[in-house]
Image 1: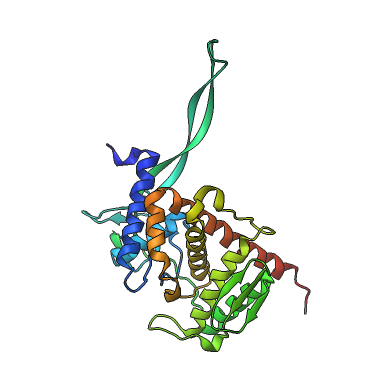
Image 2 (image 1 turned 120 degrees about the horizontal axis):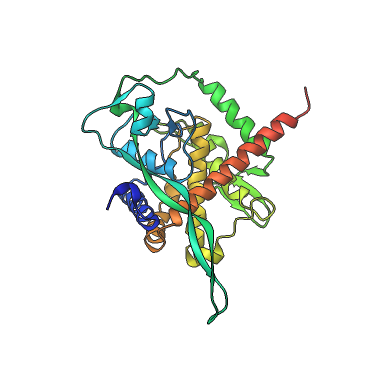
Amino acid sequence: MNRDVLSRRDVHREITDTIAAAIEAGAKDYMMPWHQSVMRPLNAATGKSYHGVNVVVLWAAGRRRDFRSGYWATYRQWAGLEAQVRKGERGSMVVFYKSVEVERDEGEEGAQSATTAQTKLVARASWVFNADQVNGWSPPALPAQGAMEIRENAEAFIAATRADIRHGGDMAYYDPAGDFIAVPHAEQFTGTKTSTATESYYSVILHELTHWAGAPTRLARNLRARFGDHAYAMEELIAELGAAFLCADLCIANEPRLDHAAYVSSWLQLLKDDRTALFSAASKASVAATFLAELARCRAKCAPAA
């Protein structure tokens, strides 16, 4: 079968298996494919960020193959940038959705049926190459942000959501009944080799804000109907991905949360039982991250002048 025309089921299964393998490989120290990624993957030709499951897929591919660049593009796009993919380099699979027409019969049983056309979205595979795999291209210069600016941006983002965040105790969680977030004081967090204590603190708040965004009065994220017994694991996966997306957007190193290590086996079972669960989780995480970003921008824009 030509890989460029994989069926939707094949695309879902191949990507799900790839991410499941990455989760399983990192289970020992809870290093998931979405951890320690400081930027979202960007398309070198369009300058736009990848979204949804493609973010996770490219993060996983970059880590597995030790790519340092966050820029990707198709073979044709690199050629359009007058860059050349080196001979022998293998692409990384991403997914896009294409509208196709399907025929549907209408009419009562035993009667002559009329055939109508309707469209549906079908997943298709595409292959992209990292900037580390090409010759003749240099990334655009981006303004560097200092630690103080990153911290101020994170503080402003979180404050602009106007979520009820209560400090104290030694656990972080979102309380749906009270509609508030509990988080330990920033001084209780510790740093690692790749992130500061402050970054760990912010990444935890962003995780809980993703939960907060799914409340009935906001995005009304109800997973019980489709995912049943897997609903809790699914919600935690959404919050993990949402926090990772937001950390990348805010230039914050996203570290593993060891208190979530218990979810690894349930995530693996979820992906085994439902080949589209990862796609749904990544999509809902993207929606939550966009919701929070738009909320923050609106609040900042509408804030009274000093």
